[in-house]
Image (cartoon, rainbow, N blue to C red; front, side):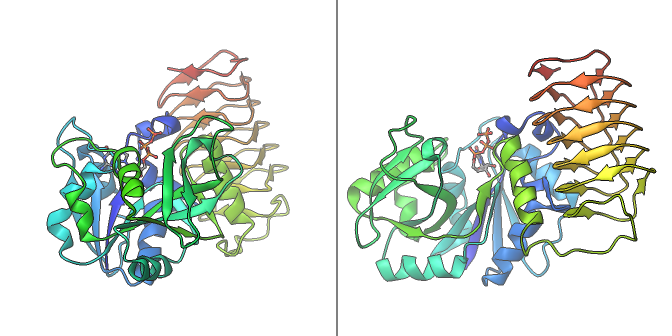
Length: 360
Ligand code: GTP
C-alpha cells in the first residue's frame, strides 16, 4: 500500500517553534515525529510514501535527512504561495497512486493505531473513505463523527461549537481512501478534506469510521506537544538508556548523548534533553522539552516549557508553564517569564514578562 503524509501546513498554533521547523520535524523523545511515522508505516507494510509538502517544508524536511529506511519517498509540492489545504494535496498525489486503496496520514499526529487493521476494515465496508476515529474528552477542536451501527458515518461536523458535538468520536487524522475519492476532489485549488469532501461523502453514504482505542495525540498546540512527550515517557515507547550515574535525575527522563549537568541540579521528572544541552549548577528542570544545544545557566528554574535549539537561558531565570522559547533566543540573567509567554527565534529578553504574550 502507498501512503500520503500531509506535511505542508503552517503550524500556526505552534509558533514560534514552527517558524523554524515544520511540525513533522518536532522531536518526540529526541526523534523527529516524521521518523516515528516512517517507521510505523513501514511496519504496516507501506513501501512508498508521497510527502505532500510546501516548498518551505520540502526544503526543511530534505535538509534534515530523516532516516526513511527502505521506504521509497517522493515529494509532491503545493504551488508556491498557494497552499492546497488538506484535500488539494491528495488530488495532486493522484498520479503517484494508481488503482489501489491508499493511506493518508497527517504529519502532526502520533498514534498506536494499527494501519493494516483500518485498511482491512475499509475493504470490507467497500467504503470510498474510512476515517480513523478515537474518543477524546473535548471534541470541539476536531472533526466529529456520528456513526450508524454498521460503522457508516452519517454525519461529519468539523469543529462543532463547544458543547454541541453529537459524540466524542473525533477524526484522528488517518484515512484510508479508494481511488474513487479523486472524483470528489477538485483539481488545482485549496480543498478542505474535512469540510468539503467528508461532509459530502457522509451525505452520500460512502464514508465510514474505524473506531480505535489506544494512544493518539496531535501536536497542534504547545500543551499537546508537551503532553505527548510526557505520556510517552510513561509508556513502553520509552526505552530507558543508562546515561551514567547521576543522582540528580528524577525519572522518567530521556537524555541524548552525555550532556554536562552541573552540581546540585535536579532534572525531571518528565524531561527530554536533546543533544549537547548544557545545564549549570543548582538548576531545576521538570516537565519540559529542551531542544539540542540549548544551554541553561546556574540557578535557573524551568517547568512545563519548550526551549528551542541553541537558546540561551541566563542565570537565576525562572520560566513558568506553557512558555515557548524560540531557537537561538537569549533570556538574560535574573529574568522571570510568566505562564504562556512565547519568545520568537533569536529574540533577546532583558526585562521580566509578567503576563502571557509573544515577545517578537
Ligand atoms: P495550524 O496552522 O496550527 O492549524 O496547523 P496546520 O494547518 O499545519 O495543521 P492542521 O492540523 O490544520 O493540518 C493537518 C495536517 O495537514 C498537518 O500535518 C499539516 O502539515 C497538513 N496541512 C495543512 N494544510 C496543508 C496544506 O495547505 N498543504 C499541505 N501539503 N499540507 C497541509
